[in-house]
Image 1 (tube, rainbow, N blue to C red):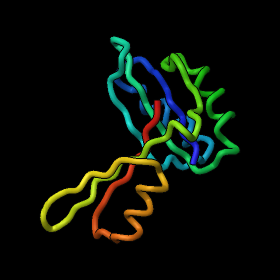
Image 2 (image 1 turned 180 degrees about the vertical axis):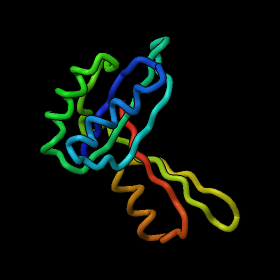
Image 3 (image 1 turned 90 degrees about the horizontal axis):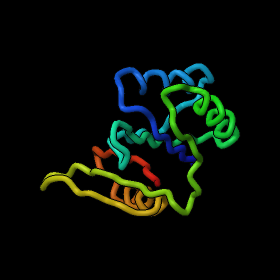
Length: 120
């Protein structure tokens, strides 16, 4: 899995334009995390993709977008996975390395869950 971190202008339509780059190249985005960041008026978008061969090309296209301030590939040692698992007694939250979170999900086989990847 490859993770791309973007700092973008926090304005309407930015997410659609960013995702248009992936759509145009037929690259499936596995996870997306979006939120305000440490820089006023800006947001951070963290995307994960499975196709490593496309990452550098996509980053170059992202950097050309006027909405994108910064676009970088994040080294694997800085990847972090988060999961929310629905259980009868409530929700369980998991945080850890991607393979650790995936192993817990495979072992517990929950009926409902969501996993996302984040990195800085």
